[in-house]
Length: 316
Length: 110
Image (tube, one colour):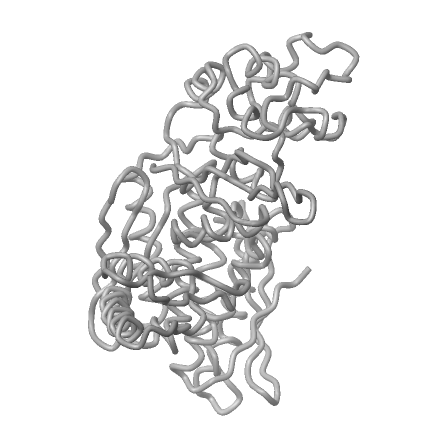
């Protein structure tokens, strides 16, 4: 997975920006804070928030392999100072925070930052309870990366690896979807395709499937959520990302959206004045960003808060 | 068979339930039967204890309300993080109801 670096005035804005660039929702983002924003005096010396982010990978390594890799320090995991922990400000922040994730501190962080929750999750617990921190008051000042965020839970579930292969998960997705289509009293064919490292495409095709798409695709969206949930349940631990399309709806829509974005981009180029598009979902915004990025003389920014966030096409 | 009287009784009750579900007062299939089947199917596939799932259909003035029952430990799976799964179930139930011309509401029994 590609890492990107973005900066913005605040951390939240930087995260929003990263979500947009990557075209994902918050659950799927993994990021490291490179630099906390600083206000400066009268706006002088102000620095932006800078983060490194990527689409959260879905790993199928065995847990102990991941742990070993972590112990070497790959600089991506965020340690949480934890319930019993010292205030975050005691730990290093800023650019050094990531750099500090070297082997030595990583080991310490691994032990020290084990919150009660982490400890519970870890099945083989020996390395955690290993007596390194007697008395239950771990020394957390060494925790290398301090940023804690709402997505920690998701990030940590990466440690719990599914026992199902990607192909098995795809089969689960197919069977569940086929049964669901049948419960609707419809006839359709369901095929799955494993794409990339951790993506499963499920395609339903047939006649009269409009009810499975719904107005503006809301039923399709809901079905996708359910197929995901079913795969997650069957796979246990972490599972692949599932994408659903019915009767080519999403494919056609992507194409139409790209064509539309391109036509607006041409207008912006001709008129020299920016145009804001309707609010869109993260994947849709990504289509717009990507399309416009390929056109000279225009660029895109996003503005507004989810779910009303929208792309503005501006003259470059 | 004879050494499992309880199971038989359960089956019989299930059969009765099914009859009640399938036959409306006018003798037609009950409104929202497809939505119920869809919601039940989904719920059963999301939980650890599929046998603990059943769906009550109640007909009200403004459509059919489906009440999903599940084992206590499975409610979280049916509701999902930030209610995402139950929202999806609601939407899918509505869609299934629309094919029968029935307005469908889905709730979880707790």
